[in-house]
Length: 194
Image (cartoon, rainbow, N blue to C red; front, side, top):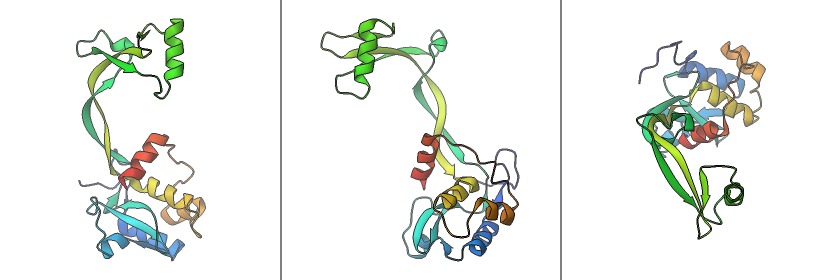
């Protein structure tokens, strides 16, 4: 995948060499790609590298031109959709059984017993039958590029001497006050992709 610097879908891209040199000046104990140097290959070695501080892996960083924001693949799968979509042609009504002991069972069973949710029904064996609309939709897949904001946020979280919001902003001429707030799911997905 080719990244154009400052392309609209990537935010402001930063070249890998510029990012590496700037980080090394701020914190001389930072080094990169230790895994590749020691034959500890990972599946994304062509597009991603490790960022280490004094031998400890901190996070991953993209190679080449690094987009500002994460880039995700898109895949198609069946997902739950809102009830307002239930009448659409491509939507089917699905059913699931929630058995005692399952996470959230007590709350769901109580709502079913009280009749507060017409889409829940108690079964004679104590399980709850839940109906919901379902359709095939495009959803976010895996993290293709982690982006420099993710990398810099991980470095800030590691509390590396010399790495501060102010030093990063000055070194790379970026606004580190304008951090993108990510959901916990996005953070876990990106970290998992590292």
